[in-house]
Image (cartoon, rainbow, N blue to C red; front, side, top):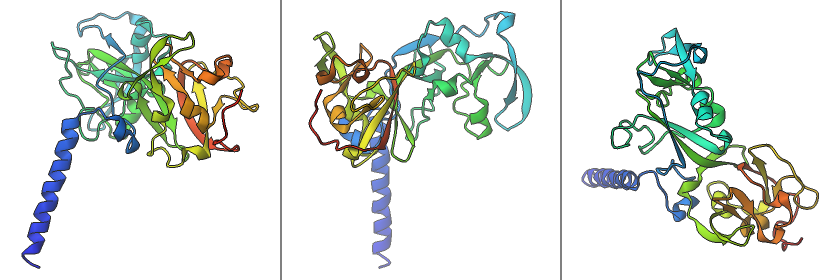
Length: 294
């Protein structure tokens, strides 16, 4: 036994190192097969990039606000800052709720110098509801600052010498236990499907959003969607903004049109909503295995 135990421990260590090496080698991307295990990690492929003004920029006086600032040691002070939402608005982003946001310091080649997202346990990109609470604090080494995260000892979002903000088209899926999971769509596999005009368009299968990590029994739930503008419409059987699992199996998300499309329901606007930001699983009250019917 004394001889076997060290061998077993050594084998376990080697196995653990191999697992870590595989995760690092894979980066942040995942294959479609991996989607059954975990929601996608953060994407390497952004949809939009906003370049921030250089550090010697003289900003207009009316942009400055005084904020409560915390340094990495937890010491609080008052600092002059500019809301990060200003840079999104001036960049002409009409629908910020569609995206997750990632501040970054890029080198001359456009590569992140320090990337807290590129590690085995990456940070989750910020939804608009959180990102809009952040600030640029030029006096503190030109860094982004998020008070609530910093107060909870999460400092990775406070990027020094920030010069870019990446935006990623995102849909949040809320599981039956009301826990939200962020899916950056660029990590999902695409297929060519006909859009509402009968033209082929890159698309995502709706079922790829409902992985085994979200639920093992997708047929037991209905799927309530929310749009960027909180639009409401009747979908089927008098329901509002709701799909059955059969609808989900037959539907897909058109990447360029930015809308859900279920071919059998092309004439019903509520069944092909645009700019969807969230899909929540709710307890089903119907037999979701029934055939589609208009």
